[in-house]
Length: 300
Image (cartoon, rainbow, N blue to C red; front, side, top):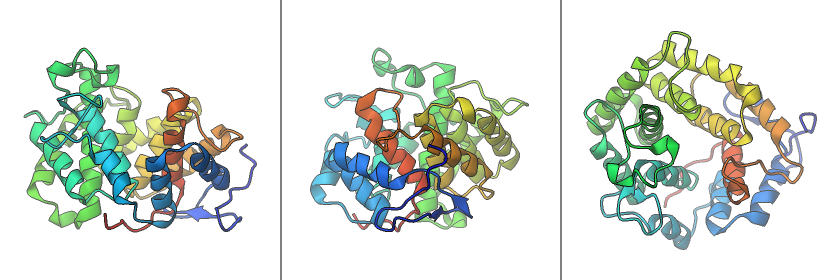
């Protein structure tokens, strides 16, 4: 698979993706075809925006926002009464794929995240969600706390970068991100590793870079590069999409990640999810988010 030429839908030719001169080595045509064939309406709308910036229909956005709680977050389960940090960050990712980080729904979600940040700069799930929370979101667990702080900090960072010049971030974002970054920095070990889940690494590296903790961010990126060969396809896609979403400068880690994405792409165009086949389309969309040139935000 690594020797296959990358193609772009509607062009059928090799293409380079920003930033820099990173050559896309995945079969984009096949990935697009997989999402079209197997995706639901929301997933196909996300694909359309990622490819062309097409504004999704109201019914698509409503399918995402319908479950939003009055507080502003989304519940872990469809009928749950309590908003979840983990679920809210997932929904923000969906909205981002539709150009929707400046919508009222996203603004409410981001405001809720800021409001539930702990005084020490961390995010944790509500204790009432302990029985249903997965390992990476277990309230009170140090590994889960570092992961959730990295992910919530990542999405607040993306939202701030999307909407404001760097020196004009609203105080609510700036203070929350400073506190989150201080917590993450305190947990980066001298060798660049961190006592949490792998995904805390790329989300944390972006958060720290944008908070000008360049040394710690660079050390985390070096660790990620060392672990590329053993990463599952879903982790590769998530890492590449996160690192690509906010420009970290040198694109060496992206180049290596793109190569591994090409090597792990299936012959049907998709990538394996870590949660089973039902999430393969989402993983494939994440990979496409990493390699397709980003278009302008839609006016949702």
